[in-house]
Amino acid sequence: MNKTVLRTISIMELVSNHNKGITLSEISKEIGAPVSSVSDILKSLVYTGMLEIADEKLKYYSIGMKSFLIGRQYVNNINIYDIAMKHVDDLSTKLNNTVFLGRLAGDHLTYIYKSESKRSVSSTCSIGSQSNLHTTAQGKVILAYNADIAEAALKKELKPKTSRSFTDASELRKELAAIRTQGYAIDDREDDEQLYCVSAPIYDVEGKVITAISISGLYDELRDIKEEIKAVKETANIISRKLGYFDDNDEIVMK
Image (tube, rainbow, N blue to C red; front, side):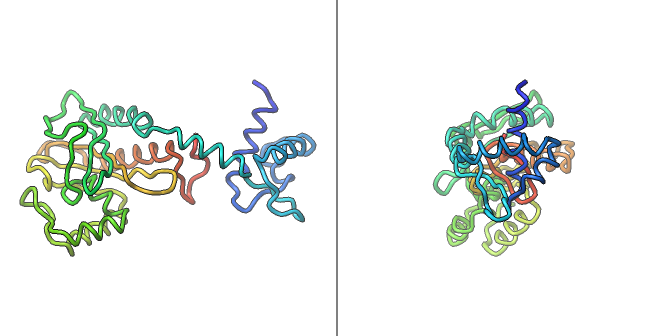
């Protein structure tokens, strides 16, 4: 391993976690390297545009435009299908049930990937098929995190798929608010009389939610719903991170 390269990467990761910048002495202390060595690396990174000096007087270093452009190129080359497929399969194996990846398409939900376990129940939903936004867990997740799309849907007639589907706009609005608070959605036989589904949002690099992941199983079978909620949210978070999304509580996520 090249020590200088590893040290350079450590510096980049450290600087990226300090929005207001970080000084030479602070970097040296954090990574445990001599000031002289760190200084040489910083000069090269600033010269190439990977870092910038945020404050000329105090010499605070921050992420440069070149780093941003490289990161954007990475994101532009991402195919969500390729990123998510393995994690969808892993979740299906772990929970021994069917897992779907769905994406907003017009005013409907389109299933773009499906992973079935040996115990999975037969589902009429297949890759490429569409479902209503207001009757599915994934659809409600997308509505919850897209105000404009939700408002448009709430103004239309909410046609039921089952006797448990939301048909009242005010009740659905309350449901969407709850989804945003808890970070997941439940479909309790609202799209299919036999199925109970749990879904969580997948964020893209811009923090938008147009994709969701869900697990589906028979409503009357023995299932640990709390465990399913936790696992679905964790998997959604992993995929979001790999798509380049991060929030204020995250450190480096674009790995």
